[in-house]
Length: 331
Image (tube, rainbow, N blue to C red; front, side, top):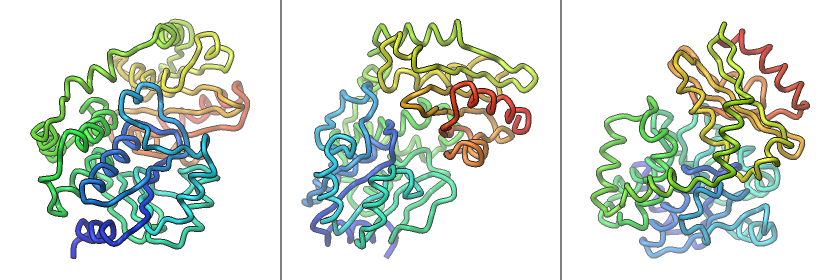
């Protein structure tokens, strides 16, 4: 039995299925979760989605009512995790990625766990693992699961729309090197199933708020710093600056890619201050400029070679100084 049929068999035999994804939700974690949920429902089974925290506002055009949040309803999420006889671990490769509260529940659970993920260096915690580090996204792997388990006929617009979203966002609108011929084959199947790709692009790209645009304009005009010796661009935003522009979750998500679009830039780093923690986004170009090692070794993070995240509990000024000190070693 191949891994896809094993996963289907686990779904069919389970009574209480819980779908989890990583903290700091993004398009792929949300899209993969909802796509898998709707597929499981099409198989005639029930499942619940339990995420650590709220998704960015720009994803809320999707029907996210099925997602329970640990940060908002810990009692219900705890109850669901404790009675689960099958837990899906989507878009993360280490239990720490779900945050300390859900991590404790996940590690205490004795039921079968299935990891579906595309990040490097997966930990050995799941019962079954569909880990494809060359895949563009976890959403792409969910489409593979649907097809390879023999149920491509079940793929429809409801299942496909969040999966298309996941692939779209995790590939930077199909521009990252993770996009392969198979990625486009998967996209073709989603379009054939009725996914309205143009509407998804509109929902993602044409819903800016005034505050978001003003914040991004301020960041680019007043906060952009370029280290020309290494061709690395940095933007650092304090909590006061974020508050000045009525910051909402997701408002800075496109800044790193915007910096990377500057001619000659090898890497871009954006960090913002929130609740005393500096959250850092790393982006880079090419095989010679990996950022996941920098994120993992120095900022308690990780991710892909050209797209990673991390955090710092140092002060705003100390974090910026640390970053500038490390950049010459990595670039």
